Length: 415
Image (cartoon, rainbow, N blue to C red; front, side, top):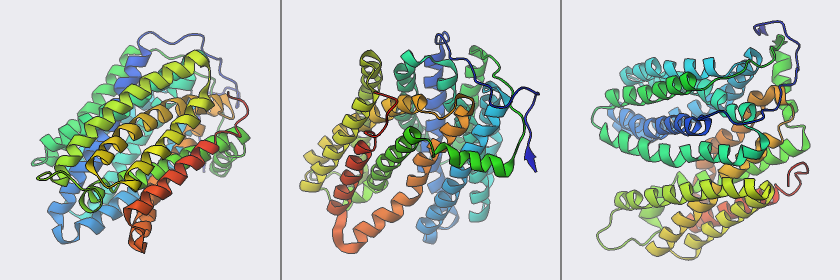
């Protein structure tokens, strides 16, 4: 079969570089990304776990891991495909709106799934519609923001993670006794953001793309990694994300078995203290990192420095098991990761192999986000269970952060 494209324009036509950022675009990018991360955190991190426990309490750990793994693989594959489809349509807004509105029925089905198989299928469907939304809204930055403002735009996108994480956690906790309603609330949040974004932003139709056979399209995905600068940006992102999620996925267990908490403090209460600290630190560094990288026109410097700062943060709890060390780690790691994600996103938009394939190539980059998240829990469990404990886990994650910093150096086309 072939993947069809509307219109009859010339394949590979180059889209014009935007001269200025559309009015109100950056706040709308913040809203759109905040809604997306709120759903991801609230659903995958809280409601889905409660639903799985409700169905099969005895096997909740295995079942939840199975659902998370299958859906993550599905998302990894689907994201670049959805990006390519929006590339060939020459539009982003219809895909943002369609994916956002489809989140409501997807969440409705997830709420009424009553077996592990049905939950897996429903969450994969939810991942599908959310990746349609994500692939399109991710590509708005290279489409509509000039190079001189990419740092600020990427900061607006990056702020969606800490804001969305807090909203998702609070909303998920509020509906912990009624996950069906909670799912619909998250679906409505994304749908509302999609309607607001598409109603308040204008887009110019991009040059139409001719149809491309599926085999050739899949080969085009791989061809993006043949580009020297894009390949190194991909490698750096994958290494940083792998180290980050190898540790963050085990935060509760680290607080239980590694950190010496103050008398009377439970690990769950410690998480509630650390999460706001990390989020505030991420907000500060995301804004400052994006602004400073624009001001000095230095992307590699900020990306490399923030990756090294993350390595330093990871060493702190490796050498000390105190509660103070964990507090310091949360703040410093939040500062590092917020700056890294904001500026690295700007850097990536500047090393895309071809402008007309922006969404597809950003989708390929998202494999560097999703792929490491799939394997991070398995790598972390091997390190911890092999006898190294959580100290070894922190050290390995720090080494991955150093490698991620070094991966930026070979990039040639960006300072």
